[in-house]
Amino acid sequence: MRLLHYALPLAPLCTSGVLAQFLGPSYPAPRDLTSDSSRVAASWKKLDSTLKASLSRRNASENSEISQLKDLTFSVGMFSTHDPVAQQHLQIHHTSAEVANSSVGINKVDGDSIYRMASVSKLITVLAGLLELDSRDWDRPLTDIFPEMAEFVHEKSTDFQPVYDTQWDKITLNAIASQMGGIPRGGNSDLLASYVIARALNATDPAETDPTFLGLPPLNESDLSLWQACWGSNRPFCAEVPYAEAEANDFPVFLPWGSPQYANNGYILLGMAIANLTGKSIDQVYRESIFEPLGMTSSLSDPPAENDPNRARSVVAGPIEGFAIDAGVTKASGGLLSTTNDLAKLGVAILNSTLLPADQTRKWMKPGTHTADLQYSVGKPWEIYRYVHPASGIVTDIYTKMGDSGNYGGLLAFFPDFDAGFSVLDGSSLTTRSASATYLMDLVIDAVLPALMDQAALEAQRNYVGTYHSSDPGLNSSLTLALSPPTRPSPGLVVTSWISNGTDIMPYLASILGGKDTRLVPTISDAGATGKVAFRPYTPTTETAVGSPQRLVSRLYDVNDLYLLDTTIYGGQSLSLLVFDIDKDGRAAAVTPAAFRATLERQ
Image 1 (cartoon, helix red, strand yellow):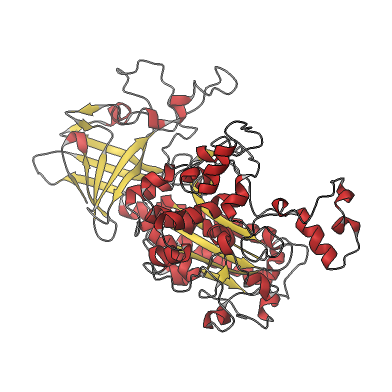
Image 2: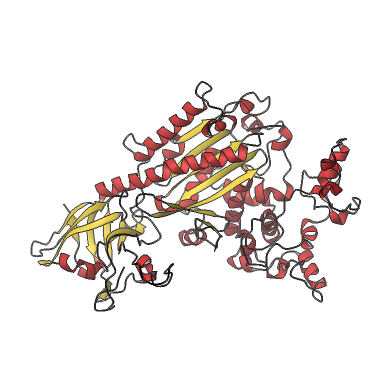
């Protein structure tokens, strides 16, 4: 986008081509995900049919990637803040032979089947912390919360070595929740313990029993300071000391806030900190702050006991010991259990800001740091994927938290631009589980996200496109809008005719809206509360072959409309703001171009 020609006397560079949109939706979020005419429902049905056909024994090809999903038990479900029917109607379930023939737990999965969800637990832990802790607690160093770490830092004060000593006094709850603490990973595979266990099981292969096989020096196995801390079911091969004390002396991976690094330890400590600061057990925090308020009656912080009725609807993939594991202090990192139906309740509650204030939800659902890959960012605890729509070049950020541990995993994914999301829960004792599960997650994204964009465009065509006239017979003012579809590089609404007070202002549209070939996109949606939605313009631009090879600075204004938006006002009102009045069905009844002080009614 460019400033008005008289405000920024530069050579015009705005022609149709490379997209320069704001971060956010191209159209208002779709309301219909489940009717027979919905593009989302059609795409979901196609995905369901494809999976069923591919996973049937008659059609399965052992060499195809999709056929490997037959050995994975999984449940997939969508949710939307605008279409509550999606939570029940858009589900796909598959039961592998392993679970179907299991003597323990459920033998056919559905929306109420209870899965271990591994690190999806981290998302619930952060939400619990946001609800229970004071905002200032998030910036307190861990030494304020754990005396063992304060003592460690004090003892090392005269001989502190950043390469070997973790700076616990510089690491905050925000840092560990954002995977920016640089702390030891936690949950590591400890070779010392594996050698001891292998010998106890009478293994004879030196690769399993002898550290010198890898050139490692023998250690004194009776020295408990060499063992990992006990956390639950890892007993007896651990050190029975307070977890924070055991971790305090471990070497750092990065300096605090230096570089993102996935650390289960961070969430173990976060769960312990929440319990410490609230005076409640972490189980009580989950139950009182999230599970009970949202009616998540099938979500658990401990696996069902043998005599618990919930055991009968639990997904047990492999030995029962792997399902019934005592997660101990690690439950905040990866020990929770849930169902497809409960995760839909959680997903809708997060998107609707049911528990958090809306401004805090928006703040929370943002990146905390980049990664080394341009398509991935990290948040608290978000794993953020930057999906590029092939036809338009539009970027949609997908906020997710994945779980992947042992025989179980899952994903809770959000599309904030569409007020929708989905969950995946999975289980298998095969080593192919992780690869199969992530492949399934990609299948869902590739099916759902383009369909959401198409459906949003169809509803924008119905709800916004048309001609708007002044109801004042003495005022000759009108505005006509068309749709630029998502199959083109510049989706959004298009102004095709604009007369204001008898003046045809189309020849001056580039100056009024800030550039040539501008598109209007929603920037503030308050249709549910006030019945109003604000739109602003963005401008597609081309990149000229001048400057340095990467043109990082010289292309700044060409591809970042955010820098030049809202630059011109008239009597205190922005020339670039159009506010629509929306009825209860989501249809625009009128539009007010703010600076022109006239409300135009849709014909």
